[in-house]
Image 1 (cartoon, helix red, strand yellow):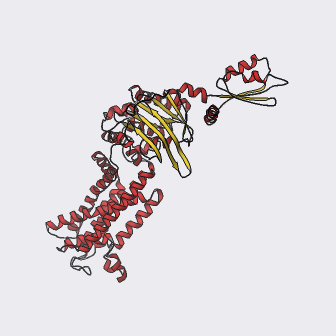
Image 2 (cartoon, rainbow over the protein chains, first blue to last red):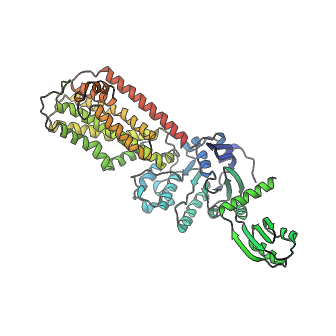
Image 3 (cartoon, one colour):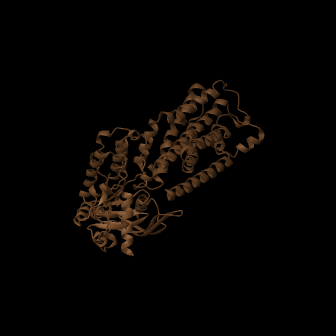
Amino acid sequence: MTMTTGAASRAVGFEQVTKAYGDVRAVDGLSLELHPGETVALLGPNGAGKSTTLDLLLGLKQPDSGSVKVFGTSPRQAIVAGRVGAMLQSGGLMEDVSVVELVRLACALHPKPFKVDDVMARAGVSQIADRKVNKLSGGQAQRVRFALATAGDSDLIVLDEPTTGMDVSARQAFWATMREQADQGRTVLFATHYLEEADAIADRVLVLHRGRLLADGTAAEIKAKAGARRVSFDLEGAFDEAALRRLPFLTSIDISGQTVRVQSSDADATVHALYGLGVYPRNLEVAGLGLEQAFVAITEAEEAKQS
Amino acid sequence: MNSLIKLELARALRNRKFLFFSVIYPSALFLLIAGKADSTTKVDGSGLTLPTYMMVSMASFGALTAVLMGNSERIAKERESGWVRQLRLTMLPGRGYVLAKTASSAVVSLPSIVVVFAVAAAVKHVRLDAWQWLALTGAIWAGSLVFAALGVALGYLASGDAVRPITMIVYFGLSILGGLWMPTTAFPDWLQSATKWVPTHAYAALGQAIEESRAPHAQDIAILVVFFVLFTGGAAWLYRKDTLKA
């Protein structure tokens, strides 16, 4: 999948980047490349190192070792050149000013600014232009942050958990806004802990866990891995263990006595095949894996592959 | 950066509480202290009448309020909220934020000086030569930069709930020990000799020298310069530390 390309044609390049806080390695030997025009989701549970990765990418933090390049230069140089627009999860807003004043400031601070009205319209904040920034709801504040990130003609847009604090409908409306940025040919990188969000927007998903890159693939590939379900059942009498192990879509199987627990990337097909074996499973349960468990499943699968 | 200064300024001028304390309050305090004083009795150890003496003290106090309060609490708060981080994602140079804050608070400190002068001239009939008014305004305005730097340093030193009490202690300490609220001649001898080294004392002495039509003491200028270097250095060091941490 990974192409070897020159540094200049890379939007972002991390090489063996490590960042530790005391004993905790927030980012641990991370290497990755983003190519221009890609829409990439950085997926991981809380504490996976997503925010630290973005801070390193934006030059807000310096790596302990390794190198971070944005369009072949340092993050700060890329920002000063107006090539990067970003919204942080922890990015506060100036208080006691109105939304339009703040957007106007963001445009003035961008080397290649768009028109203030256009920025406001695209971010969906035109209706709240005169509202004071400290009187916004969580979702509105996120939209204003998005407006700040897209105030100019940047090549890379970085969004840290952009839909935090939004309800389902607001989130979907926001995805459309994000897709617009990608459709204009920009590289979009966003951190999220919603698999659904990654699936809806990203054409590439990076899964981060404990500061490491666990998986790198299309949303469909990651979904297949992370979308695994757990199937458990009891069997009476003798049964053909080998046949059970040959069930389709299994990612793992654990047989202890009469109880069988499997993980499957397509539980429907697995259960269908199970009945096809002519056995009569009792206490059949099919349960989804939470994202946290899905990450563990991916980790185990990756480790099994390596050993 | 001009756009940030403009917005900071617009915001400061909209903040009634801040305007009251930096522009109205020093003049009110001037009237309170100098109100009953006659225009002939001289303040101990100086050739100035109480209204003339207190005019400089209160103008200095007003400027101190504007720059110290304007910087420290805002910076601490915006550091905590993450606005400072967000600004670091723009082409604004790192020191641009601090310079914009200082520039906008300096704009507010100018009226706080002029209003005290106007009240003193109108109500207490303080009379000075034209060059003295101009020199006073310039000296007090320029001298306030020392405390603007202190405000920046405090804003990067303390955070959250700690910044207000720390700023208040520094603010009242500087005001009282510097003799801005009452001439230090009222203090016991040991305290008087100590207050000579307080930067606000040197700051007010600058203005009093102009009122007495004489050159300021070299010692006062030296003290202000040393504190300016100290506060600016401290602010720069704390700023860098904060940048690495954030």
